[in-house]
Image (cartoon, rainbow, N blue to C red; front, side, top):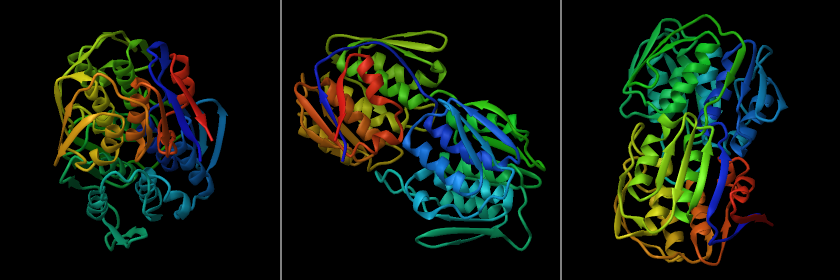
Length: 420
């Protein structure tokens, strides 16, 4: 299997262009199944999760064309299967968005339970609760979710989520777009990719308001028409490169970003000593000298994102003094990557939901293993910052969410390559 070989010690300099948002793409591509027409979707990242999802959609009967880099055209006017390919669906977490899209357009779905990163228990009980409130009969077992209209059919109504679940908010928006009446999602998640999905659907004729607040309203429409839409830049990819230059040192311009989405991330990097200059659609990060300690607690947007937890932890391992990192979303997220960082010389002590990090002057290269997507990205950052050679295994996790990572890092001066 392939792995990354990283020779650390180089500072990073130059410019990097951020790709389309993974978390938006994996919601918007299934949403195209709601459209009885042709959708041209731009700024689509070329990552393994997207490639798998497009293969699923094509096998369901939609016509999928990659007409140029970053552009995908999906035509869902023909017959569409409501039973996506089981093996492919199990390869990624976001395949569960097919449930909402198929329920919304066809009133039924038979979808294998999803796979993806296994860093924590991530139940879909809020999705199921919402589907039932909308009027669906849900038959679930350890392998499948089967959705059918209930005795009174599907109808818009109010759904109060027990927690601000991103996945449930998206799935219920997809399901409600074509369901008669008005659906109100209370305690909705507010992440940028939820707003992006709402904007995509509205461009195609949906009537959704309140996305980005804790109350989303969906007024059901009879049908959606085709159109063109560009996906937002990836907040987490941008944050990963910003954390990389903060840890390894250097001067990097991170291009094609929405600075408002990045405030929760670059504010913490500034606290640690990085210089941050914000432009209209780019952010420059300059880092030299020893980093300072900080305290971070992950929270739903607009708080510090859980998907940046591992990357900022690497910065903490190199900061002077004791830093504290509290995970409020997935409490078991520490255990895989922290052990790997410890093998590189990091001093991390985990107590429940909190990691106490005593900074060291240098990390050293080691053979490490990615346990999930963001943990893998953190190990790449650690390898760039360390003395000696780092070998990162299980890179298929990393390639689920980062487009052209090797090419982009190499262009910044990193000594990294993909080897068999």
